[in-house]
Image 1: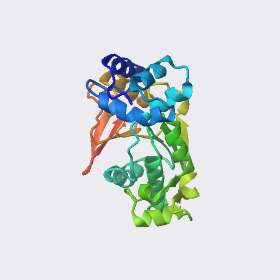
Image 2: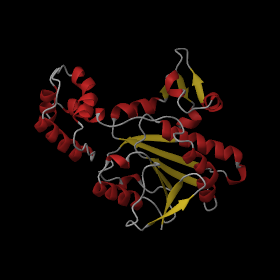
Image 3: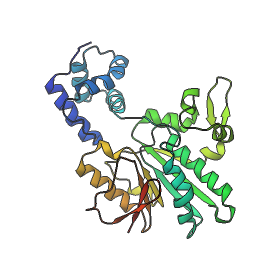
Length: 275
């Protein structure tokens, strides 16, 4: 295998990635690019990373291009990631929405293998169980990602033992999963029926998705430059009514110049409300 990505190949590939996905590689990330592309290279019988990049840029093999792009997206996730956003959802956000309506529509953007979307669904079910007088009667979660591979895993709702051990308590696993003979775990129908999965590039239009009460867009904006980040937040805003809520990752924020959002601080974490 060719050991190094040439400066020209890296520059061209970085520009291609930015154009297709909005992801900014930045300088001196050749090792990262090579590491991420290595599995896709083997799948398509390439042993020279520069020749593989040349083939990607030519674009003749669509499946090769899509596989290479998928390999450059980060799909690190686990159940109830960071814990506090889901506690805030159950203790603050859902009661706030339930004061005015009994239906709720949520978007989990960049959902990866489905853990975030299903964690939201379980939180909704737990909220309803604990608050029967303010329970939601109609619940819908749209979960999107740019990768067909991770969406297929998410739609199946089947996870191995290692996956369910990451952030999932024994109680929640017992309540909302079925154990299979091959030692995998399947999300139960009562959770699965709340979630619809869809392929979505955050740089493209999503006006056809309709309006949402709440958007989880966590740990994805950090991969975009300021211009694309502002564009994504503006498009998310267009999908929210006044009072709609956005939850971002711990390292992310809505810039003050986008003054159509107001920050709401909680004892742990925060969220943003459209004005």
